[in-house]
Image (tube, rainbow over all chains, first blue to last red; front, top):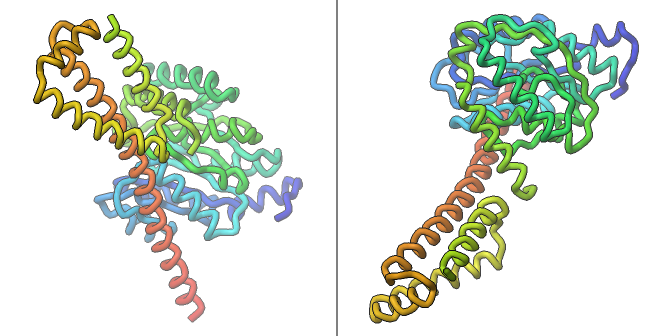
Length: 241
Length: 119
């Protein structure tokens, strides 16, 4: 597949050259709206239902997404990897976008990130809420995220400003490298260490995150940051599989 | 005094196993040998409790019962770590198995839909 540098081509290619992967777990309340929004800019949407007990798989299918259903709950990291692998095998796309199901991401940001990946030839484009604008974030959450960034910078050697942002663009060659051992919530840092280990080229892109009551309720507890640090340290010390 | 060295070394080894433990043939052999050893030592200790106290004194422990307790703690730690490693390995396999199922099902569905579109 040829990589065109013309801006016009880039603008026209975004919708079909990228597949959007959305891991979901009991998101029936918001998923239809999120998918409709994503489909304004992207043709291929893959939702991974991570063993939900509600109707979100049916709703997502009706909204026009391809749905892959985990037979039981395997964790968000596992769902992300499943979605990426499905997108790579089913669609002839050059890029995979990872997107959160709770509506905190902005699809226009995602499209701009794919365009940037095409234009700059980057293997990975990472969303950063600290380069962009963050709506409704609490002070304590901000402090934890900043600490996470410092930790991530020192462990992966990447010069990033946001460690746990679910919005990213992976070029096909980079997406193929995603094999996660941390199936739960620590996968974001694991993806960064994959980038570091394989010396992938990456850029950060400012994104807007909208914290709503729904996303806050669905989101992680702040103390889970300690679990993530523990996961990462053990994973670092253990020999490669 | 000797017991302190032995226990610290055992605990350090436990930490090492937790981080670097792998299922190799040598590890399996060591585990089996230790299991047999523990059973044999148990029988010996039951039949000759006074000897256990003598051994304990040699190692710098006051009573045989205390020595048995220390060994029990260390053994429990090793068994727990072994089970933890085993479980996380099984979890990795389980995730991969479930994922293969999910992907297979989704592929079949996509295939059927393309055929319906053609018709």
